[in-house]
Length: 173
Image 1 (tube, rainbow, N blue to C red):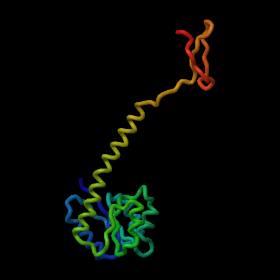
Image 2: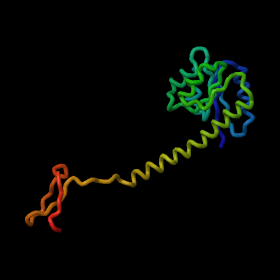
Image 3: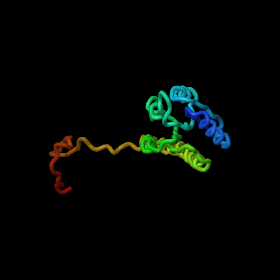
Image 4: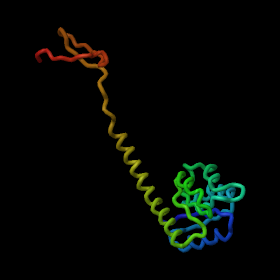
């Protein structure tokens, strides 16, 4: 299933390298590019990429600010691409798919892209499971507990609130 990507990096050579690696994959249908955080925001909102390769350190707006601005819940899956390893923990705390250190090797890039594809294919299955569970929960109504009990006494039927009952004992039948 083809997907679109967005490369966000302030370095033209880094964008070109990623573009070449992505172009070699037959599942990648479209490659968009942004050279800073501002362009990244516009591209994410306008192009709705399936996957974003995002540099951490860029002038004006870093990669984490891009994610904060879009909102982590509305952000497409992200593979961070950076020359600095000090942000890796923060990247995985916001559910990054991977964290690639520059210079990127082809082998390491392929691993990250495969991880993104795996997550992408797992997402529809997880969504289908959530929908099935939701339907089952709506079909199976929760057990309803009695609020009152009918009691026969001296030829009459009385309705007693369950909360008022302390003890029940049978008298013969």
